[in-house]
Structure formats: C-alpha cells, structure tokens
Image (cartoon, rainbow, N blue to C red):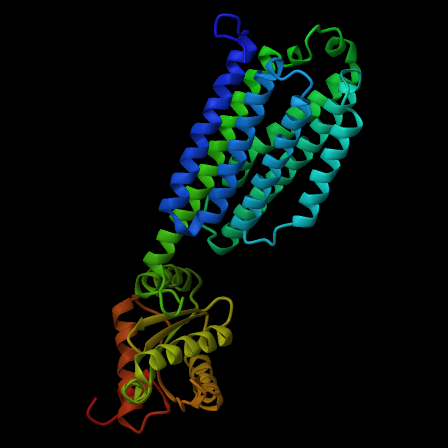
Length: 406
C-alpha cells in the first residue's frame, strides 16, 4: 500500500471503504452473538464485509506484490462476498440456498480470472467480472423484495414501500456494475492507456462504492430491525403455545368486525369453546400432554375456520372463534361441526390415545348498539349451559335466555 503522502484521493476513499467494511463486519459478528435468531444470516453478512475489505486492501497494495495476480484474487473475493451475501439473504427469507448456482458462479469467476489473467486482457476480465457482480446484486435485490413481500402477506399492516426502500441499494449496485462493464467495453482505451492498471479505480467510482456499501449495510440492518419488530408484534398478539392470536388480538379483530357489521348491517357471531374435563388430561398425561392437546385442537379449529374467521386462545383451555357475516343458525352449525370433528379426531400423546370432547357456546349480534363484552358474556353463558347439561354439546344464547331460572 502506498504511503499516506502519496495516496491518491481515489485510493484514500477506497481505503476508507475497506476500513468501513471491517467495521461493519465487526458489527455483524456482534449481532450474531446477541441475536441467535439471525445468527446464520449475520455471519454470512460479516463474511461478506470481511471479504470485500480484503479485496480492497489487496487492490491498494498491489504494487507491493509484483508477479502476484492481486486483481484476479480481489475479483474472486468480491464474487465470493456477494455470493455469501445472497446466501444469507436467502436463509433469512426462509428459502433453500441455491448452493449449486453459487458454486457455478464461483467456478465461472475463476475461469474468467484464469483465462484473462494478463494486463493486456484486463478489459475482458473487468467486463466479465462486473457482469457477474451485477447479476449477484440483482439477485439480492429480488431476494429482499420477496422476503418483504412474504412478510407483508402475513402482516398486511406492514408498509408496502419497505421492500422497495430496502432493495434499492442492491438494485443500484447492480446498475453500477453493469454500467462499469459497458463503459470499459465501449471505451477500453481509457483503461489500457493508464500506466498503472490500478488507476482504473477512479475517484467517482470509489465514492460510489462507499455510498453503496453504506446503503447495503443500512438495508441489511433495516431488514433485521423489521424482522425483530415483527417478532415483538407476534409475541404481543399471539399465544406462544398454540401460535393462535391471543385475547388482545381478538379484541382488535372484534372491534373491526363490529364496525363492518354495523356499517353493512350483517350479523356477527362468536363461539366460546372449552375442552371437557381438561384437568383429567393434565392429571393423567402431565402438563406436556395437556399442551400437546391444546396445540392439536388449535390446529383443528384453525383448519376448520373460514378465511374471514378468527380463532384465538382465550385463556387456559378456552378458545374463542369470531364469525363475521354469520347468523345464529350458521354459528350453531359451525359449532356442531367443530364438536363432531373434535370427537372423531384422534388426539395422541406418547403413543396413547387421548379422547377429547368440547362444549361450545354461541351468541350473535344482529342489530342495535354493539357491546363486545355483552356478546362474549352471552356466548360464555351459553358455554356454561352446555357444560352444566352434560358437556360435549352446543348451546346458543337464545336457549340460555329461555332456560329455567335465566
């Protein structure tokens, strides 16, 4: 590496970029230690930053390694770095890593460096390498978009523009590498006219990479923060045992469903579901067996529900199902179908059959002022009526009102 007194402005900027990559790599290593959920992806991104930093240091110190193909090695490091970045993004997006593609790209990059190793062939080496880097950056851009789109499908309230913002640095990097390839291909004399090959690194190019490098790091950080925010939101609104929405989420859904029902004058029904003799399950099979029964029942209820319905764990062994646009007869039919499905479905724990039945109380709002607590209280009263009259049955709120002593 040249001394600081003789270092050009472009190479000084490249040196800053190399040091920045090392700093970013240390940040990703710290994230890997502190965030186990993101450990695999952040380790990939730490390796990406380290390899890029090494490549830059190699470019800067090429004059001290006569006879060594420093630029070819640096190009391989850059391709490998972006391949690791792509693999980390795929893992974070829940995709199977395309390892065969990455190996093929690395083999192609090695072939390019070996075939056009001499200084007189540097034009073709730069063009081919830049196109490979452009393709990898474009792939990373698409992967980020798919990742955010997938998460938005699960959480529609997420900002729609987030994917565009986080993928923009990778799209910009792809365009910059493609532009570099076309510029070198169309005007090779500018490169070949330099006395030193490393002078092909211009001040604008170094500044552009410094900007892109910062933006990439911020985009990846933004992706991690977004995933953390989703995890916190999931923990606040979902039951950890069954994965179903919890009572808080049910309240929010019920508020929206009530507004829809009042606006369109459609009925809104709720089902209060309770496992019969659940204490016996815990006594005979332990709490682990009881937890397995709750998880199995949660899956059954969710699979039987319509897309517009919401199944929640209300507390303990109680579940609440919200049925928009459903009259009382429809709620009763749904409750009866659920009761029969549970009665006829096998519940297993450690190779033992665990016979399970449920009692269900149903209530419906049709008109007048909507009071969520009254609707749920009516369904709860119907549930207790079902349990007090023998269990494994369905009662509706109208039957409670007509029952003796009510």
